[in-house]
Image (cartoon, rainbow, N blue to C red):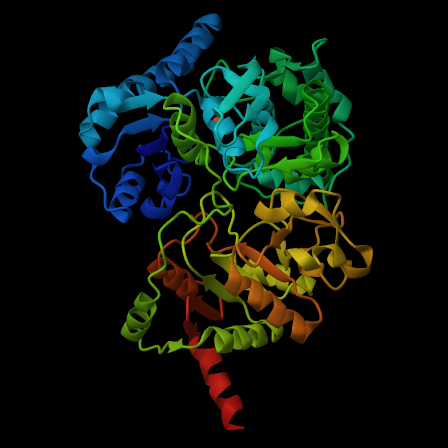
Length: 589
Ligand SMILES: [Fe+2]
């Protein structure tokens, strides 16, 4: 059976193709359109998925959209009417957006793909999140918790899943919290208040939180009240996201927390205002953690299950995830590489396959590399047009040479195999560098990533060596497989790993299994033999404001426009002219 999953129209569109129950292709629209967080209907991603599998639209048994547009429309309508006449503007905006095309998804899919309308299915938004988290995890029975901004009405669900040979797959979402009561919206409101882009700057709030003290935690607890049933409710007097598109927080919010960040100015941590913003970030982060830990603890008690699968955009909060693992009583915590809406394309397809069609369960490959394959031969051609020469080396020689360059302080653009699904570079589209000196972090921020100082860089380490450098609780190495947890760097290593240790002594590490990315794994070992620590700084291969590179052409263009010294595309190696000259002089001497 061939099933296409589609997510889009809100944030981070994607497509995923399932053949006989296993993913064969999945990619975010932004990686192909080159527009960051592209939310448009993912025509390019759909095209690529079908083409890469050699399929025509008529070969598909079903196309599954990741949410129910009518339910979502109902939510927008009801919310606007409740706030009337204040919500008139929001309503007009929503009508414009929804009625233009979003509401008519079935017609859109039929028109674009030429599949018959009865092949178009819909899952609920949080069913897609739950399926993406549970059906891709190596567990057969688990509690499930999903949390995001909002889908149709649900903003948070809890339940259980079970699967296995000879039994029907079940995903039972037993309780849900509904809009406007939303942890994602709470966090996004603070994201906007702190001057960052909503749906994209949330991780900056988490990074900033480490610089502050949670002195506003009580104030945050007052606006997100705990309810007697163990859930929470937002005090809507502090918010405006449910009544207007212009602003997400109210005047009352400003009275409590003070004037917001001017989005045209960066936060200066040496000023009183800058410290206030860091304290506010620390406070909302702490309250989010408390609520998530509490909900997970209740879920552990009611289900009695040892495994928890976490989905939805809130699952990108690695600090909260690490606390859930340490404090909720669950033994293992699984977060997929794309817990947000992009991963819903895959989730929706899996949900339809296992539950709507009742197809048998299968174990899925445990990696995020479902995107376009690298065409490494393209690099030589592109470089030649600019008068540069690439070299093609055996794996062994390439790895030795790149390890030496990294140890000499060079920055490497690393492309290998198929593109990752999800927001993180997990070893196939990465910028790599030595993790030791704080100066390297500054250099990357200044010359390559052009971004704020308070965003930490992440380390990658072979899973077997992780304990030596990082304090991992039981289950921590698994959580770090997709960079989903933030853990303490061992005090003895903090100075030697200064470029990847955040101000609070933590790191959002990736623990690498050789099977997942063998060439990067071997590079880590080679680097470890030279430097004494098989740890590298690993950041996504992109410049600020751009999506992660996908094809060789984008890697090459990023290499040319930045201070990256060395570009690796599979077996092909290209050095900046200045570096190549220095290398030749070294060899001559
Ligand atoms: Fe979502």
